[in-house]
Length: 288
Image (tube, rainbow, N blue to C red; front, side, top):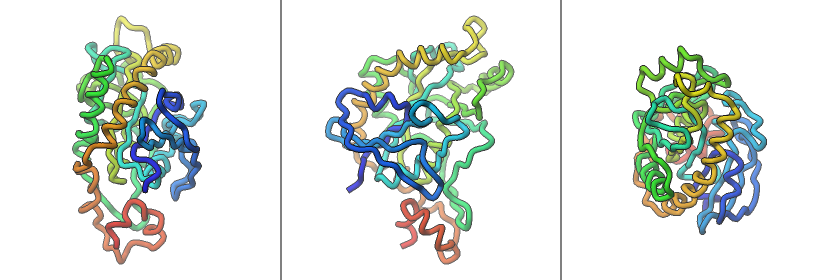
């Protein structure tokens, strides 16, 4: 039996949602180092869940400092099959307003300094990533968001930048010319690694500002972001509470569950024993 059916990555405030019973905190060492924080294992309306504070409690880690590999590997070890993510983003379109919620289905990578694969060191794998979000899981979360009364945008492109600085106006306008919908700093690596780990991944993008492209809105500030995040927090909790039981009850027949089936191209006899051992939770079933 797995420790948790569903994983949730977001702010530590999500631990306080109504209906959640916290059972334990689990610290974990992984072959890739330490995760952002201890995993909080709890039960939400009868479903075991594993929470992880993305930036660590107290928001201690920059987007570029996050150990994405350890975070997703830890979820895999706990038995998580679906990750629900919540994160703050800026809007790149007039029609996507602050306090709206957008569920992206595509990404553009503008990061530079982040490990974003479990492979290497003697093993090569190429997973399909044309559709980086689990469609089935996202559909359930979109429905829950609409039932909760949120202003919802289903689908869209998330451009992931390095940070921690916000964009220049030139960059912001460049991204708008590409037709992107939201801008953030964290979700792409999570999505890539979740796919390699055969974990379904969906993200709930909480709109906090218009980035700096907007001529009439004030330039983005941390104070503004925190104010809108506070307004969105209760809504995000309602959406998650509705979504979790539905995710746990669904038949998991999406392609995410077998993403590695034909992706590993290295001769198993040539994979170093240490790599096989380290990646056993991810690749073990394909090397038996």
